[in-house]
Length: 369
Image (cartoon, rainbow, N blue to C red; front, side, top):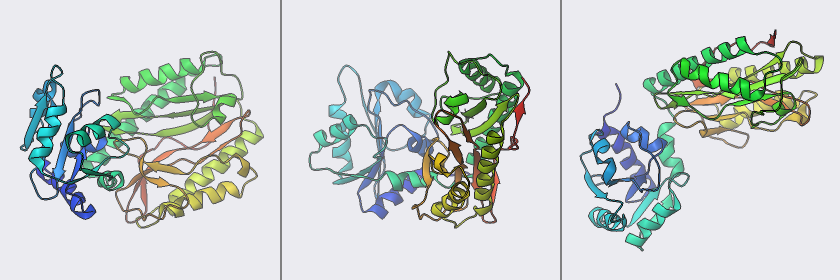
């Protein structure tokens, strides 16, 4: 059974107590959506939800959002403001009502002008970065979260198959990208998790490449596709690399090395293992190959409402990973000016090991086109 709004807000009150601050504040973004189970835009109008450790919560809400805000079912005090008047008085009223001296905020999400508005309203307010602690509440996924992520993955994989079925030599990367986007929406995506990476030939060696409108794919190209649909607020993040018409011995060897690293990471995954240990296992496979100089990235990152969120799967991160964590296992090898290969799965950590949400084949694929 999912938590009620009161229970979800209580989670943030617990964070405030654990950090020794009077309250924590959320602004529109993934934590805001997790707390309220409603999404609101982040724009020029400040919108702040404050959850004290031991008092009722309160919110500063743009007046034009009040209709949508009523759908949340929030029972705390609300201070609204209109564009014609400005938000300064609303901040003063909010802080006077709360009567707090310290506040934990989302350091990676709260914008500078909101921070300044809080301090203008109460210059002695002590504001600290509580990003890690606030976002940690999203790390362990619920059954509903994982079901939404599985739906996003399934949509993505159906779209990928349709795209690959239609790839032809002479198409541009942009042509292929546009067909992939169309197919994701055709298959039921609510939106894109991020702008897809569709990169062929030497462009595939750029981990975050942009599709080119002036490059036509040709025989022997590696075609790297990194993409994901969004469904019910959650993202998929999948990468597959295929070869067009034929593959060289070098391409085959590099691909098999990356696949071995990916599989080693899955074998090492279970509740309690650290992010360091997973990355060390994966990266060690790449380092032991003749292609060690082509390593450019860590193994992966957490996935959920955001495409990149905690935990980060990298050597040195000694965080033990609990069951319910979802991360991306995405080793890759990239040689600038030549080609790159990445294979990425979305992985749920369990007590016994792991479950991969991604099911698209990983065996070396040469597309007849």
